[in-house]
Amino acid sequence: MRPKAKIIVLIAPDGTPTVEVQGCPGASCQALTRQLEADLGQTLTDERTPEYYQRAPAQDHVRLDQS
Image 1 (tube, rainbow, N blue to C red):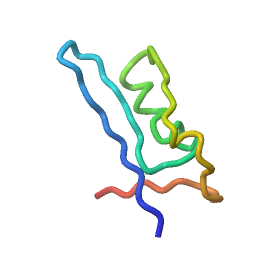
Image 2 (cartoon, rainbow, N blue to C red):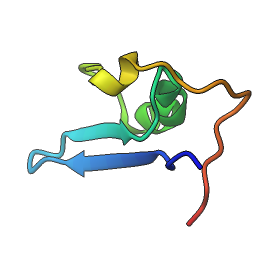
Image 3 (cartoon, one colour):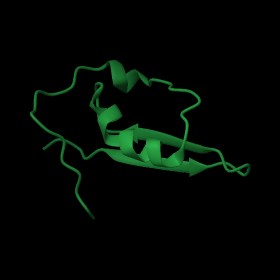
């Protein structure tokens, strides 16, 4: 069983949000955060982690559990 992806949102003291995805190799992490980033406002930087460059497992969709 593959680990579940986590979306981590940190808010700096000045109110600047940072969004990070863990447990989601490949570019599919961007689809997980697209709406959240749009809701938070303009994206100032987009930094890719080493996990982004890993090969994602073949699948047709990404499922988000509500737990």
